[in-house]
Amino acid sequence: MIVMDREKPVEVINDLLGYDGLKIIQRPDMFNFSLDSTLLADFVECTSKVKNIIDLGTGNAPIPLFLSLKTDAKIVGVDIQDASLDLAKRSVELNKLTSQIQIRKEDIKGIHKNYENGFFDIVTCNPPFFKYVETSNVNKQYFKTIARHEVLVTLEDVIRESKRLLTTKGSLYLVHRTERLMDIMVLLDAYKFSVKRIRFVYSKEGEESNMILLEASNNGRTIVKVLPPLVVHESGEYTEEIVKIFRYGKDVRR
Image (cartoon, rainbow, N blue to C red; front, side, top):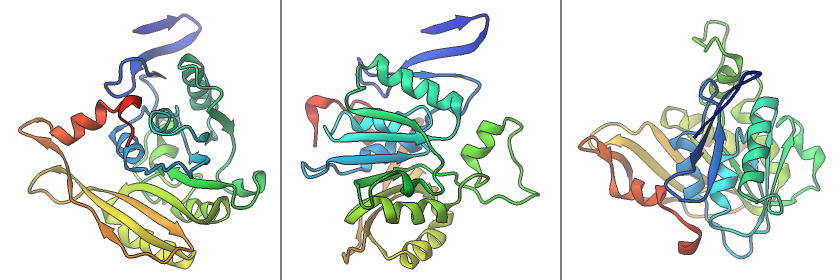
């Protein structure tokens, strides 16, 4: 459904994934939610012990919305862009999830100061993938630039803040480019995180991995589990596993 207003940009209300009944408000001119966020939210393991979750750089809140299908935990989504926050808040209201999901304007850098130390059981983040230098090829639209490049927040910022936000042995969940894996591992080790689970994502079978899903434990000592590869496309269509993720519903919680 297209919502048009002469004084406002065009907005689109879409089903989130293929789940009939869960909606997300988007603007075609902005950085809309992507498969990255969907796969990350699916990758998150929510046990009954999980009470508080925070999503850093939530955008228009696809990760909190998806997580509401698999947990009753309280979820906070934070972002620094007013336009994204407006969409996120209205999407939460549209889905009648205001009692579970809070959307807040906060800068990731220094965000731990706004919460009790170790308050969250889970931190999720789909961070900017690319390092930023003056010669970087960035998008002319600023909100797309800061979503893709480390202009306002770096990978280290995310990991440093997550350290303070998480309970001991709480989990940090990241989706990132496979080419940044070494950077991620070095920083996690520096801040005393242990990698718990990792999954390599492939656009097509036989190609190199272009994305990783990673769970790291705060001060945990764990044996790394490398999960089976996740292939997105086969014969020009989404694979059966991806379609299953798209059809995820509250009645089939894991």
